[in-house]
Length: 254
Ligand SMILES: O=C[C@H](O)COP(=O)(O)O
Image (cartoon, rainbow, N blue to C red):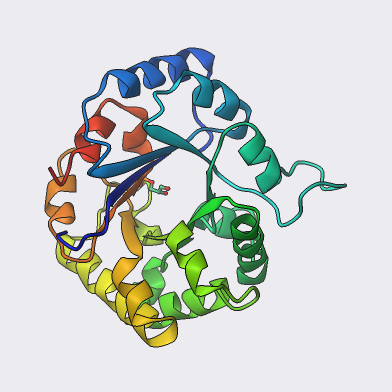
């Protein structure tokens, strides 16, 4: 990547960890070397640990929630709001992750409302999209991703300025947690198509400036080749973000 877009690495801890292991992970992050001027790093603990992590983590690394609802407060048992995320120090939210879509049945429409509301509330968004294996095998990858992009930003049309607070995470579902990474060429092809979609449907400037990151079995061994691709601006990392390998991934482009 050599585009002027700041490299972005997110660690999605999913539903993993306890006070001890999370304390140890924070220590690894606090001791790890990276250049915050070159790379933006965001980690996303399970919600109950967000405050703890935010308080103990070095300030160069920011914190994301893994989900937040499209309302500030109210009778929504089990949910949290963007306002609550901000209140405990989380400034980003991961929305539309494939596990939210496929395990919890979140629709494009619900995800779009959440994205719109989070942005309006001042929470930045890592918006996730990705095709299933059957779509890829049927040659429908671009079509599926374009439909997800259109749906994400249809319900709550965004001001152009809102785009500076969005990172798009392309995560092919077949590559998540499977050890099967997209090849650098496969990922680059899709990232380029997504940038073209942004140019055609939002603006050329937004296409040039928006970070599009890759997720799906990224690890310390494959991150450098992926990071060399022109349209890959970073990663959303699951399993490897729970290990010291995450520091290597943060430094993938340096
Ligand atoms: O949000 C992260 C992705 O789901 C990737 O997870 P993974 O790195 O364990 O494949």
